[in-house]
Image (cartoon, rainbow, N blue to C red; front, side, top):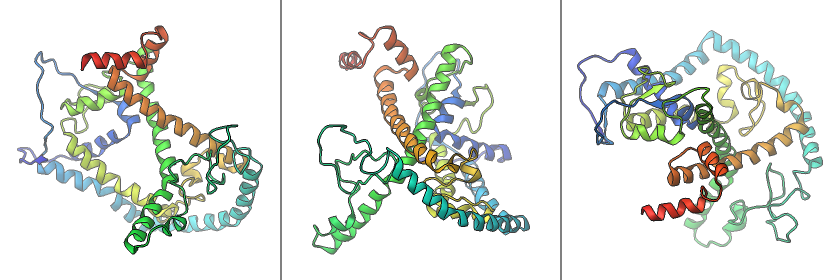
Length: 362
């Protein structure tokens, strides 16, 4: 719920701009590493409401500045500069398409020779005898034959079990979503790896004394915002980007500003071509100077192995975040401090004792 009330002072450019920068809170990496709550020197604990008190000028500023990226892209694409970039991109695209068939052949050969793909790849149960799903053939990176829920089955094979058209349509829609799980897994794995860095590095720097944050623990930064505290950018007191705004305005910024990137991802690698940017890869591995500045994909054999390493580390990061959540709920500390406590006294500072403490508190 957003309550609107007029402001005495007119909206300034810096006020509107602040809403955009404030949207960087969506990334746990930035949220943990860059933001810290400003503590007030009040002795009384003030009960705050979760209702966002935002003026109509501020909300209008959010809408206005959220439209800037779309307008800028359209303006560049229709300008002489955009036309020049597109001509250059078309030449690059023709050259890359000629090499794509050769690269694909080398990639297929690398997969056949790699121990991480095909029928002889490692399985999740190792030497234990188990009837693995036949539809998991080892073509995808990180395919260990694990699909106990049957999410990767062919929708054609399932459709015959339903007699009514309504169920056929429903199952086709569901299976279409399930087939996108491969894309979603890579996407969330990459977010989890980035967010893990953002959660660990501030706490490590603070414990080592290299840099002191007002609040180095990842979850307390967002929690302070729920309490209504003002956030300081880079931990510098007084440097606010919409610091007085509530969670609702941040959520609106997040939704509006993510429309563009999500739409571009939905359209695929061709979405950036109006700007003269050609991505030679696919939606999961777009490549090019923008997404592969180190040219890691130039070697097909190494690139196929890197795909496996990426998804393996991404899965570990997603599981690690589950641990971060549980640790925060049970101990109220950060993951690094929990690790230090466990190493110092593993018999008392462990998961089981934390559960016993929670039972006692409850």
